[in-house]
Length: 510
Image (cartoon, rainbow, N blue to C red):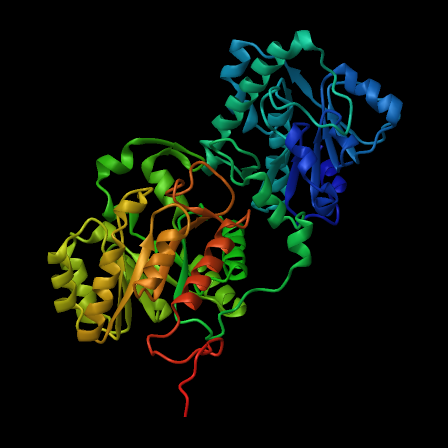
């Protein structure tokens, strides 16, 4: 069995795995872009992209193979297939309550079974293959929409009539439930399952994945990036926080797209999960692709030392700055390994005065501090404790997600601007939790020299601060950056000069 699988993917051993379904979203992809990967077809999806391995049970797939001819390198099925040289026979397990109870034990066994959910069988093969190759592999699920309501691919016939729709809908929902069961046990897998779509557990939206896979033709032609190059004074920060979901590939894409949009910095986040939260909180139930507890979730989205090394090297290569919010003293000590020029102390820890004082006494470079959910007393504390740092970026912030325009208090930015005349290390700024760019533009008119805004990569529902995060994929963030630059050009200099476009209508006679 294993020899047949290994032979089928010969020359692709280091490649990612793609499982192909037939939901309507599959038509959004240029599948030629992933042909070099390991392709696992489900049922007759080889008509969309002929793969290396095909998994099926239904008899009508035999009719398709007979009519069109087999295209995959090896087939996994319980059926007899004419004209196929390489085949792995598997026992079919029908969908019954008793069988469902043992699905996970079958999945982690050494034998390959054909489940009623062909997707689960495909994932089993991917898991076995990854283990045999001694590779922890990404497995992308394309075209698995789990509903008949959005239809199926237009590129091939679908073997279903209207009377079957309700039955198929229930079957698809059952398959989705089985997938979620696997997603809740990531520590047992040799693969990292990445669903592409708009489900709550999706790793990528369709548009986001198209950018990563090079399927976005417009973007692939536009390889230039926008650069500040000292032209602008205002520093624009793309606040990624944890919207990379602990996925280095997503993180890379977010950094590249932030640079392309014109940001000067990307910002990440670091916290010591085990000490920042109570044990009760960490042990509480929390369903995510990382496991079933809040601890699983928080640990899953934290970046490692190696991840930050990757960020440091990539940002240096791209010519974009980076810094991180540190939410506790162990995280501050961790970040010092990278000799940062800037760190951020977010609104989240404004009441952690001992930690803030410890940082103020030790760190003398640039500090960014958001002032959400604080009053003038916090301002006095900061001006006193951080008086010896090189720069202190005071970012007016309203800790609401989203914040209404009327709640953003842009007048506070003007206040911080006035403070900067007295405290020469103070730099006024704005951390935007509002929708759109209007308040950011007004902040610049009020003197802001740093604008920070949350970003996400595709419209994925469990993004951090999803309502306020701006999509890097569809161009929304690039448009906001452009609005910020327009505002900066409009504000211009405080020095009154005669502009080149001015002229007098009436001159004084000499």
